[in-house]
Length: 602
Image (cartoon, rainbow, N blue to C red; front, side, top):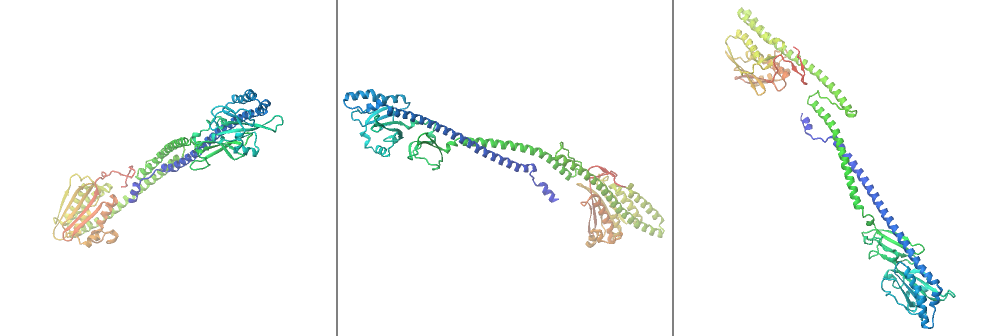
């Protein structure tokens, strides 16, 4: 019982909620995997789109540069192939003629390309002819602000290191950075002019300088503020001609910033455009994408969790009904049944449970009927053992009186015995009211008065209201009989029979002022039957009748009820009999554990 109570007190987690744990873990894992894959794919897609956009801008920049370089190349080709221009460069003699030649031929030839080109450039003519007048434009140490032309003496650059390097390398008609070009971010097309007469004699040099930023057509397509670095490299010389971006040259993976390096070659040249893109730029939307994906995954998890809890709750209700019905069975409510609609496993469980419950119900009915019959048979057997015992004692007394010729007393005893047994039969019922049990004692005492006359006194103290309470019959007579057989010591004896209701008990007591019992005798009287006397009802100290009554009370009402004896040797004996107070009316049918009536056998 303690174990069962502890199990009932334990708190259980519903099975459907336990199944939710792996389900939610699976949903969480799935959301995490899908979210991770989605984030990776979206990031790769955005990176690819950004890279494609940057490559497109680089191709556009390469095309712009190639177009403008071709335009400058055409300027150079025009001047290189113009015979009047070459003849004018070789003009000498009269200063006036030289001046007119310059204003009519040389200067117009230099100014015309400047007006047609879309960007600001510097067109410089270096001539070895000392008769030509020098024309100085803007300061060559400053960035190009406007298109301008220059006529400069060749002697001014012959001692320059860059010029000697070009002469030694025999480089001509090409693009390079010379003089202040690197500092100002410019690039120059440098070409040697030769005489039309033999195409060998040098008559000067043409230098067309343009801003590399202008050649790019602007750097709006390259967000320098985002950390981009745009460079133009000369792959043949391994030099960086132009760079726009951070002050320090960025390196792949340098510091805490990593870069994606993209390059695009300018067709027909050894020049290429290189762009270093910070990877943080490529993943600049990753934070927002991550937040959106986390939000979507969290929403998905919440929805799936709600659906899971809804399904678990619906299933849990069915399981709770099954558990409630099982607990009702545990408490003895065997009429409970399960009913589910549908065709799932719960319906199969309900059908199996109902079939099992019907079988158990029928089995309990059968066992109960057999138990009632067995119990009734045992009560009747014990009762049958009491009757012959009393009859034997009474007939022995009648025989003694007849031998003495006491015919009147014999007649009174026979009448008393007849009345006693009429009350004992009680129409075949084992139960009797307290009132009828007391009448039975009166009949017994009438028999004893024939034998003992007025040598004993009997007093009754019965609480009003308990007379109709039902008890089993023949529970007082054996104890009153024992008083006459064993307790009487001296000339007279007094007997007190009481009846009270104590809470939910009916308590009857038989008290005498006889000799009482020694502890050993009392212990022998209250020991189990097989430990005392012989089995035919003639054990010492009248123990058989006491045990018989106690066994019948316990058999009928249970272990809490029965007989308790207290005795003091030389001071009398008290016998206390307890019965449940809420007893059915005499003759009423007993009820089985399920509440259905079963008629006891008579």
